[in-house]
Image (cartoon, rainbow, N blue to C red; front, side, top):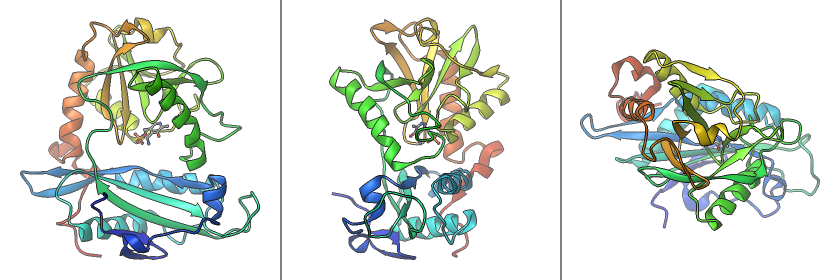
Length: 309
Ligand code: PMP
């Protein structure tokens, strides 16, 4: 049973039981909604909850809205303020996942984006690890990533997650933890809900924003941290077989954090244990998200010590 008590729904923070949509809602019928996944991390020493890169998440949210003609009466600052108020009311003292969804709210038949009302809802709930810790086994999916000219992957569109779900369940049924999805060019795009990095000859490599990936915020965080650590980073197309010869492969995402891939389709990645570049970035990342690294503290918004809105 969920332990969260509230949701932002129809312009107000209400009891979660009141946050219900009709079966006739356009977005429920056609997948015409966009969403975000944001995390807040509990810092036990400071007794504070920090929301990580909240403004960047809401900026991406509004870019997704723009692609689907979803007009909201809120800007990034409004959405941040609502989120802080919601999480504060919940009173969480543990790691949290925050889920905003903007959707076509009209209750009528007809698939389109124009001349429909839009609405936004936000809820938050306690959250633990998304992928198994210590190293995952991945397979290359038989499903291909959605194309920019079909359903743009750079927008976080609910309907597009059928693509992720097909890949994830195929991997699960084959006995793997996660799927790596290629794009229509046959090159590596990303995981089912994570971006992908690999290491070759000490260089950190990740597919570019034009490879039909979600432009991940954890991906951006890792690129920034790597550059600050003087680890060379290259964004370039990645071949499938580079996964087999890389010394390290890892996935990144808000839910997944930094997650090492130790085996791909029966082949060990490197030595079959998390590699040194992953380990170094992972340790730093875990401190950064909990507000423990002064240099990156601006990415962390405190929930409880912030002025009430
Ligand atoms: N790719 C996909 C398809 C995703 O769903 C996610 C999770 N939002 C990511 C990548 C990682 O993005 P982020 O680091 O912004 O969570």
